[in-house]
Image 1: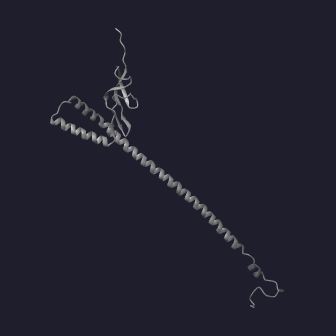
Image 2: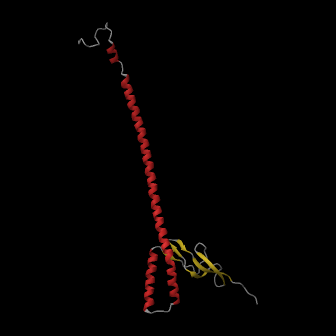
Image 3: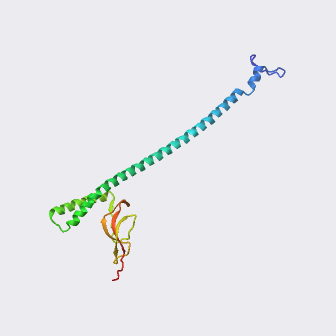
Amino acid sequence: MNDQSPITDSSNEKPTDDAVEKAKPSKPRRSKVHQLQEEIAALKHELADAKEQMLRQMAEFDNFRKRKNKESVEWSQAARESLLRDLLPVVDDFDRVFRNHAGDNDAQWQGVALIYDKFLAVLKSQGLTPMNPVGKPFDPEFHDALITVPRDDVAPGTVVEVHENGYLVNDRVLRHAKVIVSKAAENVEC
């Protein structure tokens, strides 16, 4: 036996205060564990909040990116439509020239016709499509009626003549066709 030991083998001796303190479970140790568990719980909660905030920011950024891409496409389409709309009077002028000089076959007119065909090919590559409403029912979504004329050879409300061509860009109306529409022929008694 060691003389310095506070606990003795003899059953008659009372343990010293130091021995009682050592034998008792340590409160500071339990509170330290409890404190660490609380810190872990707080850190888990903080981590969950940070993850949620990060997910929200990622979703906001994704929505922002999609919105900017959509705006970019819309700007591009609007710019293309604006340019095509500005070029339509040139196409109209070419059409009028060719109508007035339909019989000319000299080399100059053939050269101009080739240039015009190339010009139309470029416009078509940008999505421009001319309407061909003659013989079709009048549709205010695509046509502007200039006048109605009595006709008995076609059904009333049919486009009989085009004054100014209409055009579509990617199936959307760029310019309405200005048309002359038939109406029922009036019977005149003499």
